[in-house]
Amino acid sequence: MLIAEQKRKESISEYIIFMYQTEDLIRAYNFDLGEIYKYVIQHFPVEDNMKTRIKAWYRKVASQMKKESLNKSGHLDELNKLAKELSQFNLELLKSDQSYRKIFDQAKLHINRNAALSNGHVTNPIQICLNGIYGLLILRVSGKTVDDSTNQGVQAFGDVLSYLSFKYQKRFNGQ
Image (cartoon, rainbow, N blue to C red; front, side, top):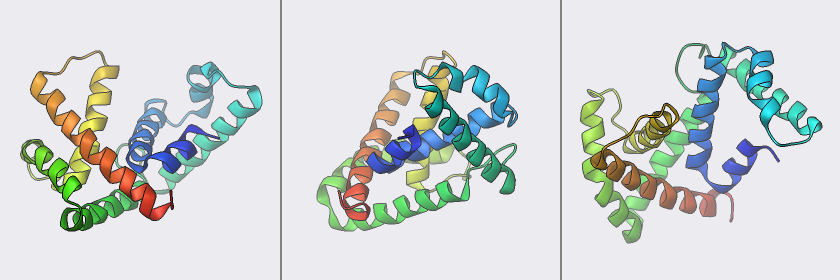
């Protein structure tokens, strides 16, 4: 099973963040699958037939990105739809699940702070959480450190997304 398939099955928010990473990786290699194979896929500790499947998957994602004109930025329509579904589910849980409401309320300060930092470009709280987690991943990959306040915010975002994804999987995947 490919990593993306597994993540989609287990945690929808982890899947979305993984796919954001995949989109950026494809862009970083200028959609050159030969380079992606050479510098990324070739180093995966899997059999050659699995590497072939992984390369085909990257080809499919890259093709879809080109089709949707995402050469420089943006996210696949599928990911935007999933993020929107999570946002709708968030609203539902805020009304019906006190445990979730408590987790969300603890993250609210950090969500509001990040919304303000985006100058109104991102106002959806779930998209803010997704972007926050992904942003931390990018910072860590680039070797940068983050302050305690940022770490607390990302922890709160992770708590929101973990609970939301768990409930989402139970509801929509019957798990």
